[in-house]
Image (cartoon, rainbow, N blue to C red; front, side, top):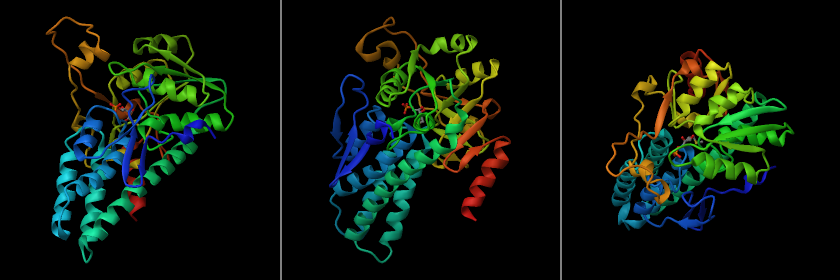
Length: 354
Ligand code: MRU
């Protein structure tokens, strides 16, 4: 087992919501307590906690934090506090569907618990559900790792973009889970991590995580990926996702689409690893996935240093969509879904509700 298993991105400690502040990594490892819904909102918005599954887990506890904070009197007020907190947290970031999935789940159990329950039993139920979402997330990531590990062969090179590791989930990760499990199985391979402009999740977080796990990692600038592929050093690409449409189109960190295109040009299989909670069947294709726009300052003044002329116009979408035809497989907790994606995704979800 790698040291990564001990990485607790989000924890609930005797009623306190504690996260690793990812904006400080890799220079400082610091945990912070999110004691109000405003703090939870800000932590998500500012990427102190980030990565689709981690945002969902954090928001689930955020509903509990925000409800308690409002000190509601009686059942009806408690239920309104749950709904108001969930509505507020839903405005933090628009693309990762796990946020809305977790908030809906918390609202649903609150409304169920209100039926015949008390304000106290409702709040207790919220705590049980948030802990369950956290526990499930870790379990799902392990299953993604088990299903995905065989896509990495001995002696191969693997490219990843952004951070879909333990830091992007409750622990263990999605794309990196595939690598962690392959490593635990004794497969030898080298990872090439794109640095991932503008916020450098690949450099700051993925390279940090992989070093911690003892996995061979080489950091490259985003614009080096095609060259490394041409040199024959990449055999497979594995990335995470923030939202996957019903047809398999996958939104992930800006630059993922570039990687998928160059992987296709070099005949390298491109995989997306994500739990089923990242699928949004209400969205038929990637065209309808809402894409977050980030503050231009993240491009012009990255990490406090001005690198562009004052007032320059900036376009900074946080995510792009990789069309399904560029994807070899979607690695989930129930197995690898292959093309034709629309049919296979629908069948996977139908079998779960049957
Ligand atoms: O803006 P971020 O850092 O939240 O973006 C994260 C990603 O794009 C990840 O690849 C994605 O959320 C998958 S995390 C398992």
